[in-house]
Length: 563
Image 1 (cartoon, one colour):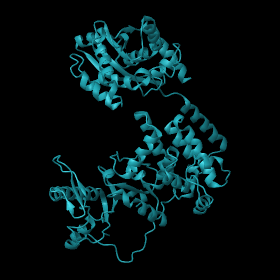
Image 2 (cartoon, helix red, strand yellow):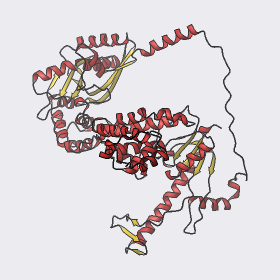
Image 3 (cartoon, rainbow, N blue to C red):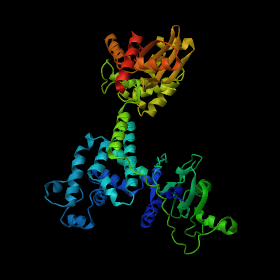
Image 4 (cartoon, rainbow, N blue to C red):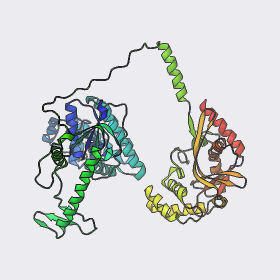
């Protein structure tokens, strides 16, 4: 067996720190594979303390925690010396600015003060990355037996911060509050963390994160905690008023509500035990360590111990005094002679040249590399994976509604617009999104597609042009009187005919790339390619004037990109 054959499943996250300490004491490699557990790790909590200290200099708990973290490495002697010298834990006071102290506390305060002054102008992702990079946290990770585990946590944290910033436009204070909720255990999160398959380490995760997975060896841990049937506040399931108990005093419905809640908790605990136990493929190891309880049935571990006592033939205990088993490292592959250095360098250079060539290109990128001129940061398609008015939330919402709306009646526009606006975090702009969608549906282009009754939405197309794959998504494809028609929705701000002509020229090669990929895939000629512009009052359209010439230009651009 290898380390990565073993999965330790925790019922709750509160046992993680003790488990980490024991693994490190025994020199056992491990990796945390649950999001909720990652937020609980010390490294992430240290970064949270630093961010909280940058956000609020008056938060003395966060400031002291940041100073004691490896990022600043202030020892107790440094903190005591600072305090006995009359220092305070607020780095923006007049006393701090007028002092001329030296040492790690002063250096840390200077760093925190600098970021605090600039916090409103630094993107959150960049701020977190600067803290990790400038304080050398990746390098400090080499002090641990498994630095890659800490690097993975930093990458995960950066991904979460950037996603939060992109989706919600959060401030530093919002980020600190969000991270605290994640670490507190009171936030529902998607538990899955992408595993690293080449990492031979014990996998640690919550039972919730293990759903649908299977492991050769499963160790159930943390099931010996006492049951929580002494809640002081209970919310009845029928939606009635909350029931409260304070000492010996309680509301009239507390006993009944607490009994119902305890029954549901019993079922939930049994379900977790079932999920954890059925994750094992070959061996199931159960820790029955528990604190004896005289109330009710006791903890899950206590109940499992009683079940095992009644069925001795179904399990076997570890022998008393069993010593730790050391895994034998896998045998190394047989040695082979290395090629001459010149041969290796020649092969390496050839591989790098091949990999440096473009393998695939999106239609939106073709529009930015052709003779029509490069796209600017404000153009649609400046990022291939985002769509709409300069990749704005409104543009993405309009596209999302048009993917699902009933184009014939438009009866569900209001509902879908509200859902799309909420998904993009802009509920206040629901009416604007609805008006844009209705204008597009009422356009002559969409009505022609609906009248023909042969139309398709969000059509993915890809086709090779030489050695490069051209690919993209067609917003609307329909069969008109003259043949196939490609329609691309645009949410650019166009006010007059001149701006429509300019936008059509800017996207000319993008539409031609769709037509080229479609023709090569279907073996049919595309009759027309139109751009449909969303406006509040109406939705004007414009077609590529010479589609054949534009397609030929796309072929030249793609061929040049491969060179």
